[in-house]
Image (tube, rainbow, N blue to C red; front, side):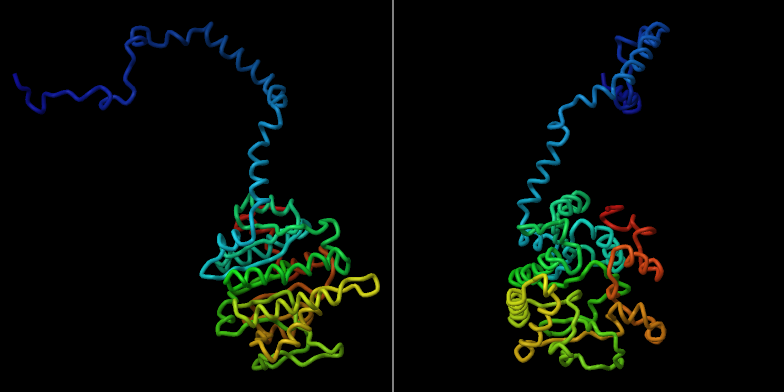
Length: 356
């Protein structure tokens, strides 16, 4: 005999998402007797007391096995792999960082996040602590190119460790160019106030900023400035943008040669910037060089010390470099005075969070 549709009953599992089990439906709540509840409560108290001792007895190999595997993976991570991972539209933004500079890395990165270019950022870690910390929070955005310099001395300006740290830079940049990518290098004691990429248009080989404090006219020449008292220009090696051209590669190769010819010594505490300037000057006839506008890319000696100029060029500033001052604490204090220390109020915007 057929049954009409409205007379059919749906399966219990569809009408009641929690169907009663026949076994327990006869004596509902029989488990929750006073004695059972007291026993359960006593067990919870005992477990709460013993848990700290149990957890501390767990072998550390079981706890740290994942982190060890991760560290091994990042040690084997190569520059070419990292560039392929972060490269967006054929461009990579690079910085080189050792552990003491992590707060500055975060401050710089927050300013780049605001301009929506952070996905292009590659941190070249100069010690394993930095490599692991950055990749733990932002996987794939840090790489270490062996051998790592001495982390204890690399951050002291004027030291041999600092020279060893900075002299590696042109090799990293050359390798990225050889991989076919545009590359922008920044020191991390910089802050982006606006998007710099509209200023990097055209087909020039190398773009850079002047490190002199003398005020230039707004329509100044974009050619390499003439040599100064030391026989070379005074261009900052802190902000460089290059396209993967023969000319850009030539400048990097010449920079490497200059650093080899003028090594650090106690008598002559060299750094990488003079070598970069010699390389620019010696290749100027073969390479298309471009000096960025001073109003957009001022040196710290101008931006932080010439208030009249800052007011006259208000709204034109793009990247600010906190140079012409030495020492972490002094740099942070100056950034705070000018409202450029973003770490305190905007750390949540960084992919690294409150890293230090």
